[in-house]
Length: 414
Image (tube, rainbow, N blue to C red; front, side, top):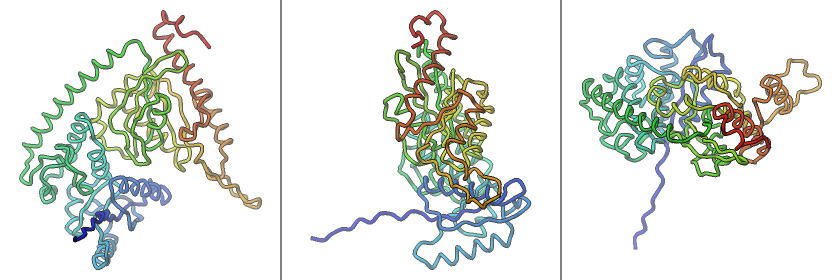
C-alpha cells in the first residue's frame, strides 16, 4: 500500500523595518522591533532579519531612504535563491497608501505595517459575532484610504473574519466577501451596515449590564500578554483562554467572583499595545464599555518586562482616551516569578539601572509611590495570592458600601 506523508506547511518568513529618530533612540527602536517580532510570531510568521535606519523621520514616499530600501531589496534577492525566501516585509509604523505602493513596487513582496499586522491578528483571534463585526469594521476603516493599492492584493475569495474561514496567510485575513472590483461606495455601505449592527450589540450589552444586579463591577486592564486571563481564571475559577501570545483575549469575558462572603463581577478585556490603531479603539467601543462602566480597575503589569514602566504609561494614556482614568485602581504587578536582575560589580561606579534593581527595591519604590494601591503577585505560581484577595476584598467592599449603603450589614468587616 502506498504511504502518504503529510508535511506541515512552512511558516511565512518576515523582515522587520524600524527607524531610529530623535524621539525614538536605538534602545527604544530595539524594544519596538522586539514587540513587532512577537506580533509577527503571533500571526504565524518567522522573523529572519531586521533593518534599522537612523533618520530625522519617515520618508514621505518610501518610509526609509533609497539606500536602505536598496539594501532590503538586495537581501530579498539573495534569499530568493535559498530554501526560505522572504515572504513579507513588516514596517513598525503605519504606512500611507503612497508609501505602500512605492515600497511594493520596489521590493515586489507582501508589505505590512504594524496596524495591518495587528488587524490580522485580531481577525485570527475573533471568535464571536461581536468580535468579528468589530474587526471587520476596523479592517474596512484601514482599507478605505488605501483602496487603490489594495485592489491588486485582494485575491482571496471568502474566509477571513467576515465569513469565519480558515487561518489563511499572514496579512490576507481580510473581510470575507471582499472582491477585486470592490469600490469605495460598496465599502461605505458595508461600514454603515456594520456600524448599525454594532449599535444593536451595544444596546444589548447595555441591557445586560443593567440586569447584572447590585454588584460592584471590576475590570482587568493592562498591556497585552501581562497575565490578565490567568488572573481571571484564578479568581473566578473559570477557564478563560490564556496563552503566551499577544491579544489572546479579544472578547470581553465577565464572571461572578466571590471572596469570603462578597460577590462582585470581574471583566477580562482586550489588552492594549503601543501604537494601537485608533480604528481599533473606535471599533471596540462596546467591548471597552466594560472598562468605562466599571466601578474599579485592576491594572495588571508584567513586572518582568524590561519596559514595564512605559507599558504602564501606554495603558494610562489609553484609559485617559476612554474617559476611565479617574476610576479607583489597584496596580497588580504580576510575574514576580520571572523577574530577573543583575548585581553590579563592586568597582562599577556608573549609576544603577533598572537591570540592577532588586525586586524588593522595586516593591519599596512602588509601594511608597502608590501606598496600598499596588500589590506584587505571581498568578502562575499562586504567590502572594491570599494577600491579593484580601486587598481586593477590602477595596470592593468599600465601594459596595458606598454604592449600596443599605447592604452594609451583609458584608461586615472580617
